[in-house]
Length: 238
Figure 1 (cartoon, rainbow, N blue to C red):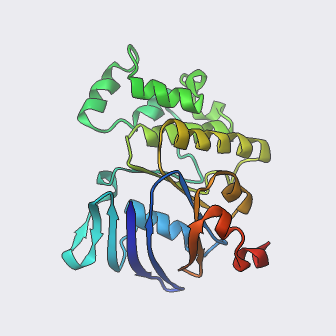
Figure 2: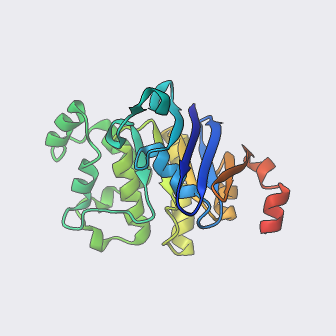
């Protein structure tokens, strides 16, 4: 469960979000450009600090303004995949993936990875179908392949939650369909809860279990995908 009750004021608008998210399957954050979707992602992962409020993930307090608690991003056990894959261009895919290994046990695995990959590493590589890419550099990858590597790197940090901020926005339609199928596999094969930011209703219809609509920095509606997609708000949008 992810409990969010936060406020953040910007020069151009005020952001407010209060909602419990089940953290099962895919929860889509839907809204037009500038509505505050990425703001929510960055408040959850710690890249932004709210002016007030709380964020609690699976009974772990990440933010509590009244108690002056603010857990830094690297200690939140939350993975984030952005629009740009942000891979290290001078490292091969296997070394980019290694940056996801960040605890003592993972560091041991990391040092031996070229000889005997861990079962977790193998599982993630297999689910994302990137085994044949391990010895390539990012410049040799398609946009969809780069995003799959970025997802793999985030998953190898063993997060409790994966955030995806419009990961398909730079891809053409065939690559979008391909990556959506891999996102489906993450939730079913790895049981990874995902919060997925998008402005595309078709993506929501394809993969989301629940949807939160954000409009002008405010939570407009939240619920099961089928219910939300029938709302008057979205009918006007369509």
